[in-house]
Length: 141
Length: 141
DNA sequence: GCTCAGATGATCAAGATTCTCATTTCTATC
DNA sequence: GATAGAAATGAGAATCTTGATCATCTGAGC
Ligand SMILES: [Mn+2]
Ligand SMILES: [Mn+2]
Ligand SMILES: [Zn+2]
Ligand SMILES: [Zn+2]
Image (cartoon, rainbow over all chains, first blue to last red; front, side):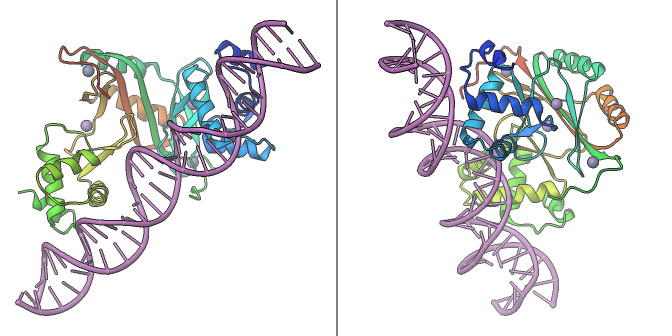
């Protein structure tokens, strides 16, 4: 089971950490806010504090288990690190998040950075638009 | 002078708005936080409240006079709208911000979005790296 | 100069995230 | 399996950024 991931990351195997990892692995939504994870914990009867959720997520991020994204909105979202880098498209109407990877964009980013004398380490790219999905109602809030 | 910009935007010409616009136009740093603008106002002896700075910047943004960016950090930064869209490279060490525009990246973004069934409206792209500028000390805080 | 819609400033408030610290839980050891 | 020490947790306070309230002030038109 997944406790090996925790041990590998040098993190003590505790109940909150296991539960949070479980939610990240099994939730139908790949991109979750800390509060969404917290609510799922409450719903499944776990007595885990919100501060712990934030703390654990930050540790998971430092350990490379999850990555943190800022997708226009005040809350950060977290997703399990699954090896490959990717960027995101967000629907302005329904909030749906799609993932993509485009080698041309990645290469041009490296070239642009080099051209400006930067050793590029990371980047954040988010596209915003309206998804033409037939199941896209306007976002409630 | 610049009061015409305010009038054009349908905003009453007031002292705080003029001073803030002036700072955005004349500051050596193109990308300023609300607090940085507030401090410049204080330094030049103006008695303008921080709430007004935030309010005015939000109005300027709505009027298309400035745009608001989130460049890794808790504070948003604002810059004068000068017509052309561009993206940013930020130095992890000294915080220097460079601007760039790459038509290939722009085009691929449109293509990727279309491919995923999105009508793209906007995007946020920030590259992070170490600038090899000889005048780049490690950032103090 | 006068009027009043609109703008300002002081303060309070909200939302997200982190910090503090007493208490609890792992892990290692016996 | 019991025990001790280190690390983790939970409750709540604290912080930081930004927006809201509301009484007061100011600018544009007359
Ligand atoms: Mn993703
Ligand atoms: Mn810029
Ligand atoms: Zn949608
Ligand atoms: Zn630098």
